[in-house]
Length: 402
Image (cartoon, rainbow, N blue to C red; front, top):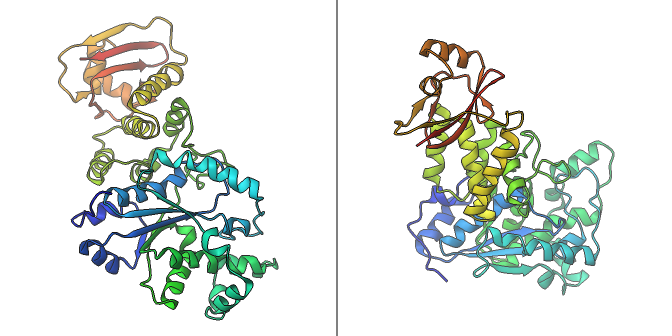
């Protein structure tokens, strides 16, 4: 196991988090050289994972790389109850066979993000299974029912005249007990789990443990740009998707969501991410180029660099080149100084006679680069390569910049 990195940039470690509850105490542990127990709990309710799940795995991997002990806690016991989080009706309970099938599938996908050689996998049936009814009742004598009634979804159900069942009421207590059983120093989870993990802090303190820190990660918005990523909504990028499908889905993300994906869904260093987003915001980097980089980064992580390049070429040939004539003039611009101004590109490709005409064509929305409209007459191409340039409906050129 690698040594603990006591000098790590904490902003890098906590990248993308909404909040770190108990951060000050956690920082002291990190700087002291303590090997943290980093917990992430998940009930195996789905067989296929997507980038929304991987937001937590990316954060876990940073702790692994810093030398800490990361525990993937599988809620095989609690999944038999059903987490009521975010549900206005009771979650259907899974059979043992469904749970085991989901676990098997999940474990074949998390290794695309996490280092499985150091990853510790535990099940909460290890400590919850042997407990008797009396054990649970004794635990209940130390936790106020009023505290549990504070959950927003319980209040919402009551106001709507819907029932809250006893097993749902006890779920946060069981999840909280997991933190005590593992002696967790920090738990990483989505914002929807904040109440349950706060219960973990309370239970740890009841039993004399230091309360865990809670690193709260945002819920990743899906490819539709509005709803949380979900298989049921069809707006997801699956970890097991084929490279071409994964790349194509990333390219469908709205431009204004790219910052979330760069921050939460890639393994790029924080400095690199900030550099890309700054260039994107200033206009120095075109959204198309930023999105293509994003697609390559994500596909390369879950497949490899060669697959990422092949997926990009597939996307260009299938999606960008639709409605393109079979014969397109090819123009080679050798020794072009980059960045290359869009108006200069149009002139050197023989698609316009003057800079002023080129400006008018661009501002009028009549120019496309690789299938995307360019309306900023200050736009520059920043990378060498081949570009499909279109002016109007009928004028095309494949321009290779050497």
